[in-house]
Image 1 (cartoon, rainbow, N blue to C red):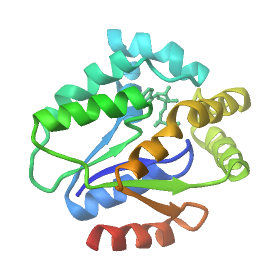
Image 2 (image 1 turned 90 degrees about the vertical axis):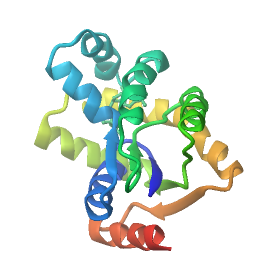
Image 3 (image 1 turned 120 degrees about the vertical axis):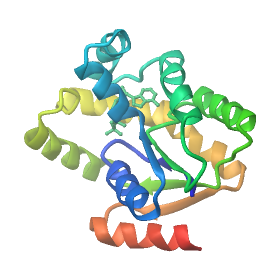
Image 4 (image 1 turned 120 degrees about the horizontal axis):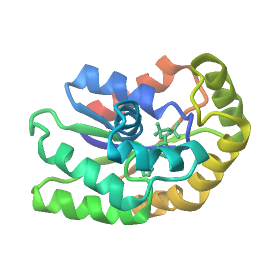
Amino acid sequence: MRWIMLGPPGSGKGTQAKKLAAAFGADHLSTGDMLRSEVASGTELGCSARTYMDRGDLVPDELILKMIAGRLESMSNGDGFILDGFPRTEAQAVALDKMLDTMKRSIDRVVLVKVGDEEIKSRLAGRARQEGRADDTEEVINRRLDVYRKQTAPLIAYYSGKGRLSEVVGERPIDVVYGDLKKLAES
Ligand code: ADP
């Protein structure tokens, strides 16, 4: 399993990536989780990233690529990996292709988790109440959606052009979405 999970913020791709990784023994790499842990430990990278994250902007490609490179290389070859929240820009996708080429690996599936804007907004507002994430305020949510449309959504065409894109409807219960993903993984 060498997958990329693509989808808007709040689409549930992180939840699904975690479940799949546990079930299939794959490594789960979430750039959002990695960044939050850098912020929490107060590293130099975390401090630089935080300003962007709090505004709902993307952290510059250069920082993300530096952060992910070592992790990709140190991953066991075994049962594969699920990339969650990366790549998020076309430049990141191109850089990922290069890194994987060097490692003689490739992506076998890109899964788009589709969820409409209204549902996203209500989910993120709910998460803000529960978890108090600094980037879940209304203004920042709108900014993140905008950034997704402009910078990340073009990756749908990028990967569908390479014939590796599959879609699942994310506006259904977690286990139902998971059932579809499991079938894809087993097919
Ligand atoms: P969500 O998918 O809910 O927006 P994530 O946890 O994936 O949340 O990411 C949170 C924030 O971390 C993003 O809004 C962005 O600022 C930053 N981030 C995560 N991954 C990347 C990436 N690949 N490139 C640039 N910024 C990123």
